[in-house]
Each structure stands twice: as C-alpha cells, then as structure tokens.
Image (cartoon, rainbow, N blue to C red; front, side, top):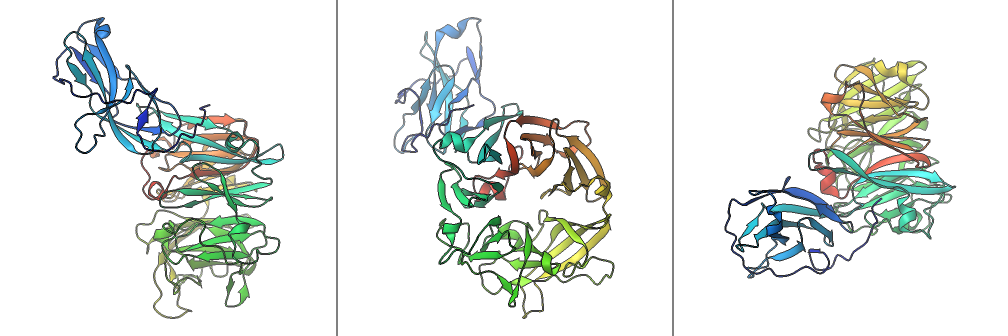
Length: 521
C-alpha cells in the first residue's frame, strides 16, 4: 500500500533530493547515436506519492550507455528566462510531486565525449490529489463505520490496475472514530472539489473530498433548531436545491440563490422546515435520481404513503419552478399511473443520459404479486407558463412490458441503470444480470466468487466497469464494454477484507470530471 504524505502545495513544481537547478544552455544538436522514447506523452501523477517512469532508450553502439549522462528537464519556462529547470538527475524520472498542476518535462542525455545533448519529446504530467477520484467503500468493522478507497489507474499500455487504501479513514486519523451504524454514501460535487456525505446511525457528517477530514455534521448544517430525532436516510445534491430525507419520510431542503456549484461550501444551511405539498404531509420513501442536476432541472420522489411519484424543480435558480409537480401521463389506460400507482410497488427508477433537458430517458420497475412491469419512458421537462394544475413534467412516450428479468429477482435484488447507454444491471444473491432496454431481454452476466449477497452496484466515470460489493466484505469490478457483455467472464479485479459492507460510491474529483467523463478513466 502506498504511504500517503501530505506535502505542502506551496510554490514549486517538481522536486527530488534538492536537484532542482538551472541547467543553462547546451548544444541540443541531434545525432544518430541515441534515441529517447517516451510513450504515452500524457501521464498522471498523484500528490504526496512517488512518481517513477522509465523511458525506452536505444543506442547505436552496444554498451554505449556509460558514455552518457542523463537528467529530466521541466519545460515550464519562466517569462523572460531562457533557461530550463531540472526535475531530477538520472536515467529514470523519479520524484515526489508537490503541486496539483500540469507541467511539461523531457529526458536529456549528454554524450560525454562530445557534450552534445539529445532530448526526448515533451511529456505532459498532470497532477491530482491522490484520493480525489475512485471507489469509496462504506462498511462496518469492530462496531464502527469504516471508509476504504480504491483508486483505478491505467498502465501506459492501457491495462487497468488499482491502488488500495483499505481502512483509509483509520489510517489518516487513527485517534478518531468515523462513527457507527453505517448506512449510505453520497457526495456534493462542487466546481473545484467534492464533499463526501457519510450517512450513519451515530450522525451523518461531511468529509472533505481530498483530505477526508471531518468538516461538520449534517445536524450542524441546519439553521435554527435541528429537527427532533433527526436520523438521515438519504441526501441529494442538486444545483438550485439540496434535499435531505430522514427515516420517518420527512424531507428537508436548502435553496441556493445562485448556481449551487459555485456557492461556497457550508454557507447555505437547511431550513429545518419539513416540506409539504399544499399543506399535506409527505411521506417520502426514496429520492430518485433523474439526471444531472444542471441538465435535468427536476428530480423525483417516491411518496409511498400516498402511492404516487412527485417531481420537484431543483435545477432552476428561480423560485417560480421550485415546487412539487405531478407528471402529465399519456392517455393510455393500460399504463401504470405514476400519480396513483395503487397496489403496485416501485422497485427502481432512474434516468439515463439526456439528449436534451426536454427528452430524458427514464426506466422504472413496478411489482404487484408475481408480475413485474418495466416502463421505458421519455420524460419532458419544461418551464410552466401557467399556474398549477398545469405541470412542468410530462411523459412524452412510454413502452410498458413484462420484465424479462423477473424470474431472476429476489428480495435482496439491487439495481443500476447506466446513464450513457441503454442497459440495466441488477443482482440476486451473488449473481449479476443485465437487461437490454431496446430488446427487452435479460441475461446472466457474472458472479462474485465467494460473495454472499450483493449490496450495491455502481459504475466508474466512463461506465466501462461495473463496481460491485457484497455484504461479507468483497469489492469487485467487471468490464461492461459493449463488446464484452456476452463474454463468459468479465472480472477485472477482486479484493476482500472490507468488513460488513453497506454501500459503494464512485467518487468524483470535481464538477468537470463528473460532467465530462473521459474514456477509461
């Protein structure tokens, strides 16, 4: 396991053993005696962790390596200064970075017989916080909440590997307890950072998304009196509004006056006033993810006691739309009515990647007895121009059918709809299945060997890998690229020993990473 060292982010770019110096001018005339190869030319380093890279060097004459001296230069030239600086001396690039920025470097080799210096192509190194983006695992160990982190990385030849930080919080803060009774992980995604929300019986709290230090408890995030007996069940970060759901079905909100991504963290509190609809108490069972906060503009709630789904305008920065709305259904009697779903039970609902904010692909599963219906619908969001009952939410199309995966479902099934592609993954026991929304067919995908019951399914940023955790402490990833869906096996990585796992979350480093994920990141 890598040792985490929090090095000051003070001035300076790259340093190693004090060999940061001005190299002055050399004759960089190329010759045919040596070739310096660096590939690829864009690499990532992590603050506080040693970065090592060994280039490929070929010599015209065998055994000629002893006739050269080597160093790596920083190409970050200062204004009005012609000289370059040395990152490190030696054949290999070897340093501890101390700044989160991009910088260009190149390898240099000087022929000691002629003083001719050969140089490689420039390599762009991009630094990021060591713990900023990757898999977070919430579990229980020895009666306490435990937080672990798995960072996905790529070798230069595009092979996946992982850097493990089991019991991350205990390693960082050995004298502190994270809490007890872990339940769920959520996050607040800001322009330049994130906040990890740890939901647990001992009290939900916010952790800094880079250092994981405790910022404050969720109870401290209320203005005035904290609701009596507050026991947080879920948290949803929006753009104009955040929502907090407690175990009693009470919903609380905080309203941003501007773009929530730009408002300083921990400056806008929850009001402590339970949300109602026209004076009627809501009993919310689930907060439903219905798109990116700044694109979908609305998110949905399962008001289970009143057997209906409600939408709330959370993305707009105007009070005119920040209210609850029913959905305008299609005039088709055979469709399950989302405004009054009666004796049906909602198993799952989530939206996919929107082509526009007025055309959101949304998938839902409803169950009644042994019958399971799949609703593959398009939901349109728009600004209402007249007073209610005119709704800002409308079902523009819906394909309702018997769910082909019903035969695989169990009481412990978990679900995950991909955001960028038309596939839906679900589990039963330690087995994973997938469903094609276009063909309406379900298939067995894979199993978690040694796992008992899968407790959560998530994907990485580019949705090329499915992350899976089991209650008995196993974390595994599987490839879900289109070309591999029908492969007999899909396992990429598996690790055990995380205690009793309760939740998995792919953590983002900032808004841009979330909004525009890169392939194979």
